[in-house]
Amino acid sequence: MDERQAPATVPALSASNVTVRFGGLVALADVAIEVPPGTIVGLVGPNGAGKSTLFGVLSGLLRPASGRVFISGRDVTGSSPQSRARLGLARTFQQPELFMGLTVRDHLVLGHRVRYEHRRLWSDLVDFRALFPPTALETEQVEALLELLGLTEIADTPAAILPLGLARLVEVGRAMATRPSVVLLDEPLSGLDIRATERLTAVFERVVSNSSDGLSLLMVEHDVASVLALSSKIFVLDFGHLIAQGTPSEIRADTAVRAAYLGDEDVTAEGTAAPAHTTTDRPTPDGVSPSGPPRHE
Image 1: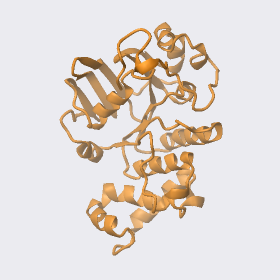
Image 2 (image 1 turned 180 degrees about the vertical axis):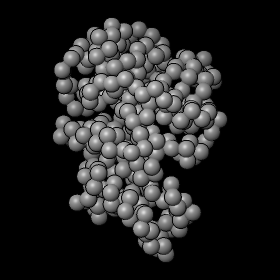
Image 3 (image 1 turned 60 degrees about the vertical axis):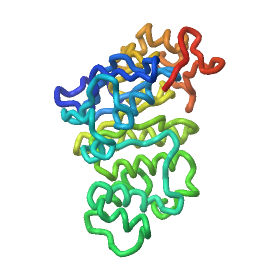
Image 4 (image 1 turned 135 degrees about the vertical axis):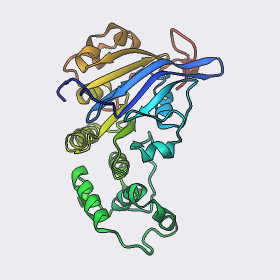
């Protein structure tokens, strides 16, 4: 993806001065982040840097000790995850959370109904194919999304038999069916081989570039090479602190980032393609960092 300046407009998602404490441990310290409309933004850092904690704060699963969270300029710090979803925030998880008995199309239909016909969900949970025929809008939007994601040929395939890469793609599709303004992607490339990684990253670029509403993606990922290739801006956490932010070229050149990854220049060097599902973990006994206290996500 070509590097570009973020548009001068209200961020799709932002957080300012976020601090999170677990007992005496500071998991995040005065962290600020912005996701402009119509962009892919990366969030990286070694294990225990605070990435999952920040995702929890952004999605409403965790309340910060201090700091604010905004969706399209609206303060949602005290809002529930459900309220944030209604304002345009969607999220995927490290392990796909799909209904094994439903097809690919069914999952996208459910996502659509969350946004447009949420009163039907109770009946859908009892019997998904029960009383209500799909509306013309539902059919049109679900079929268009299947085509955009390259899932049309497997639309009637049960989720139970999908490989991991396609299962992750279905979860992304279900999130997109809610017509969000920003999607939080939690390690979407974890465990994928090179082919599946290339397919999924191509989809991410396509859905953002084809969005008429300025869809944005905020991606937590250990595959730093893919993040550098995809993102227009990247934020780097280490020990709960924001140690760097900038374009891919600025992140590649940042000495603090190199130090955080124990001098592993392969993951930041210009033009280097790290193997798919390569991680930048710093494994140590009992989760203790070589230069600091125990890490907590």
